[in-house]
Each structure stands twice: as C-alpha cells, then as structure tokens.
View 1 (cartoon, helix red, strand yellow):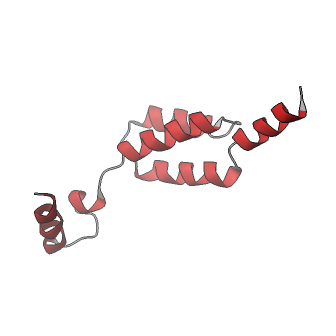
View 2 (cartoon, helix red, strand yellow):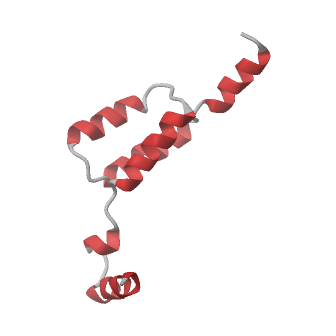
View 3 (spheres, one colour):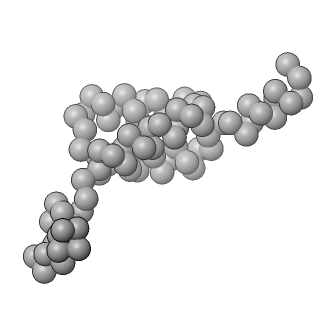
Length: 86
C-alpha cells in the first residue's frame, strides 16, 4: 500500500462522532425496528464515506416532518406551514 492510498483511506473513513449523530437520528426515523437495528449495528463497524452518506440520506428521507406530524406544534403552526407549501 502506498502512502497516497493510506491517506485516501484515512480521508474516506467516517469519524465516530459522525456515526454517533447518525445513531441519534435513528430515534426519530419511521422505519421498522429491524431496519433500525441493522443500521445501528452497521454503525458499530468502520464504514466508508459513501455508505455513510447513503445511510444519512436514507434516514433523512424516512424521518417524518415534525410540523406535519404535529409533534410539539400548535394547529396554527401546522396551518402556516401547509399554506406555504400550497
């Protein structure tokens, strides 16, 4: 392995704090418990930047909007958000 390959691998490796943030986002995701468990277990091991970015996007796409869901927001807040979207 050359030094360039070594440093490329280091740059491509995901930091622990990034994986911690990903695991935290799993608490709000709308996936079944098996998918959540599999993603959580996958974050326990080293992962490539590409895989991390894919999982991050997948979690983002499967996280419900808190305003549209009504979590900790009044009906007025929800109406304003829906009015902006229409």
